[in-house]
Image 1 (cartoon, rainbow, N blue to C red):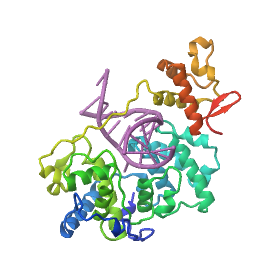
Image 2: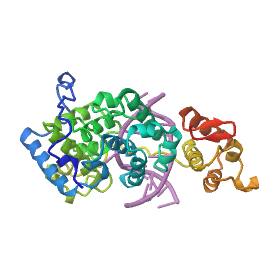
Image 3: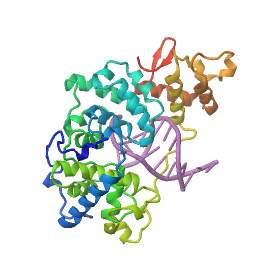
Image 4: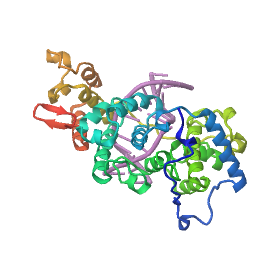
Length: 345
DNA sequence: GAAACGTGGCA
DNA sequence: TTGCCAAGTTT
């Protein structure tokens, strides 16, 4: 499968600068290497990427911008291996934005399956509707246009403009942040929140020219995913370990401890369990079914079964269930039908 | 700027 | 087993 990043004819060649000169600080806390050393890094990673890049379907030359957009939304906070089968099914079922826009939003949520953060499915559906209304059914190709779409933030807008349209953009995701932190800044991990200094650093590291910049963005991201990983990085396999500030500094430990996301016993867990029920339910689910164990009902609710039992094993307090249900309603992930709760129709 | 938002695999 | 972590966005 040919990767788009090697194609001679990148779809667009826009070279808009991503950071205005006025935004640059007098002194950057960390900076990229001088031009010759930076060019050597560009070449080293391009060579490494040509050999080691994963053969992902959204990187294929024949993948449409819509396919890239769907992949980028699905990949937000979600590992590649879990996205792959769902992405294939979505693109088979909805090969273009208009196909998805014609469906009820609830179908998008149902097809989202267990990818997590189901509001992404809702927003992707809304994005498909907006693409039909504002862009003639074609995924827009510029950063500001993409940024207007629901569920598309600064990372996704830059990624789609770069990887689907071949534009020179400052793409900064968690992988790129980590590689930059180690390679340029000598830190084990990036700061908890993305800073303006990081964006300047990333913009300064970008090679000139659309094609090289796309290749650089993709290869740094891939290096972070495969080699320069958060835990136990494989520095022995790293093509730029000789230039790594973190290695040169003796691999200092992180200067902060990330706060873990709590899960057990949270409203979030209850929301997830309720959504698991609604996704498999064949008809609206009465509130009573959420509150009483299936065994106590004296019958097996049609087409629900195991997810409902899982919900009851949580044994959440009534007010917690209530918070979850009302939250899902206000988020548009569920709606209240006379017969009970269901996915949005 | 902090907090909320799913899910499952791995150490 | 518990906690970390994964191609972030929104409020």
